[in-house]
Length: 217
Ligand code: GTB
Image (cartoon, rainbow, N blue to C red):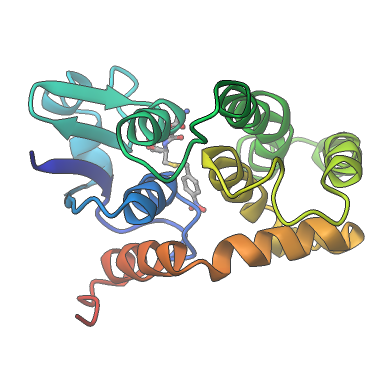
């Protein structure tokens, strides 16, 4: 069955892979599922046709037959459940991989998103420059225990899983800030994720979309 996802027609990040369609593309590439992309302008995202798919008027969405999903975490979970390669077969290990997906989305990503809030939504407020260091301190409060738990391991719990896919996707948002360099094992973890051929394919595809240059075949 054809899988169609939505993505920014022109990602505001210019193709750095930070928009959340990248994690969905990455999951599809990991499990070898072909997909097509319906690019959306900012305006189209807010129109009724798209709000039927995502009431919040955002990307990414996922359509497969009569199934339509929004929320990148739910989409990656759906892909991981249906196709081999992203969740372990053993029940407890599977639950732990799902736990790491939730940890990335609920315990790590919200702290990181505060950077965007302070920079863009509150950037003109007189207290914005004082708030930013506090935001970074709160991010460190998440990165330190994550770094301790990862230790010298390659992935968070045994083999690479959807938990790592989401965690790496979330941490990638921090690369430009330099804060990952304070946690060399996390920086190496993110680099390992980015080095995966499936990530590379996803990255190239979103870059082609963002820049308007078709990806080389
Ligand atoms: N919780 C939802 C999910 O995980 O799917 C959040 C979806 C979401 O935030 N979508 C964003 C969106 O549609 C794109 S990914 N924004 C348009 C709108 O709300 O009107 C977030 C994003 C946007 C831009 C960059 N960037 O430029 O670097 C990075 C990430």
